[in-house]
Length: 115
Length: 116
Image (cartoon, rainbow over all chains, first blue to last red; front, side):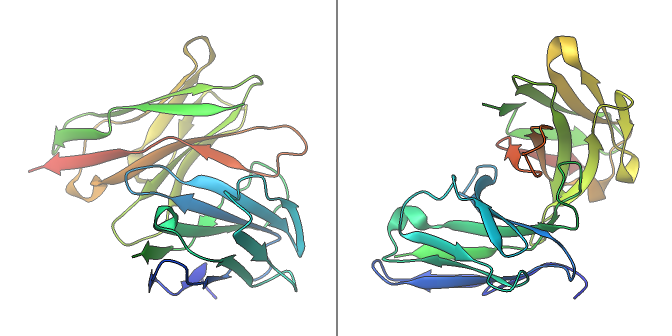
């Protein structure tokens, strides 16, 4: 597609439910990032994929958070047993390069509200 | 560890006035620096980046930023604000080390309001 696509755009979950957030990066982009943006804050790094390999998951806040990118394209961020503190906008970004000077292209985000 | 501080969560200017958004960083190595803009209901978009070439960097929409190592700053400026510049702006830093793969650390953001 023309840009990074994320779905759903909005998700309301009851505390304890599992949720899955999908990211379709720009075709051919090697690098894929997930960020979490709490209300009034800047995005915070969650995890990074280079193709299908998850090279860094140091930002995942707990073992309830899991991300995958099995074929090196679409990625899914899964949150198990959601808690109220998980409420945030989850941003996906992709880049065509492996290096660190490449521009990140962000999706519009998935806004998760946990009641 | 790297960090970014954006001074002022809200900045308000009149149309045609100078825009100055402040960003200071902390990094143990010379960093790469970025400014991103987020318009309502849109994804973050790169405005400009500094990657150790010229210290004065020009970006899209008339914005520019100057890397000042002695001040550990990367302030964003625009000579004349337009109504369309109203958005949230994020400063970000990345470690240029070989294993960093573009991981960004963001500031908390500055909301720019432009008055007619």
